[in-house]
Length: 267
Image (cartoon, rainbow, N blue to C red; front, side, top):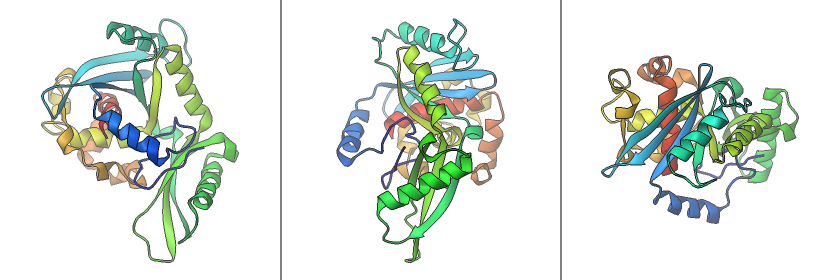
């Protein structure tokens, strides 16, 4: 089960509980020292791994782009776990040192809005969200992973809770794949949300996606306002800029998602 503190975003599916204030602050401090980060995004018949590293401040450059065919359960030399293990070794990392943010395919996610009376305790709202998510997924409440936040705009009578959820089994599958590779799963985030983050930061604009290879992409952290990562509306494709929607249908789409996942390390 996940809960979301006010101001958090809908991505930390991999955590068993929502972060307490002290741990949230310590994570924020750690991100300032992050030198490189990784995103693993779903693609046609496989997954794309993209790694970012610091260049001249405030830019991040791409140091790794790899495609792993197959599914997460495949434990052979053709599987995602094997590919991750090989990639980690090539970067000279010690076992368990690499952390990766993974993209949740939108086909596996559900989202919505839930109105609760103003003044409800967070635990009461959380319980209602869990039940609503379970109904949407056709699962028992204990079988869902979810995240939520309260919409700051309220009419004084009800508070709108924005939520997103998936089956807990999907998160367990992500964890198992990453652990077999000797990596750590930092977070899981809906792929559309990650794509929008990358689009905000992409130096040169969206035209770069089709005119330059991913290895030449650069991302400007100064263009990453925290506010743009918030809100369940981001999970609705109809709310996206037409250029971004079109870009996600191209071969560059999964790479953009993976870049957005990696960029989460600096949010």
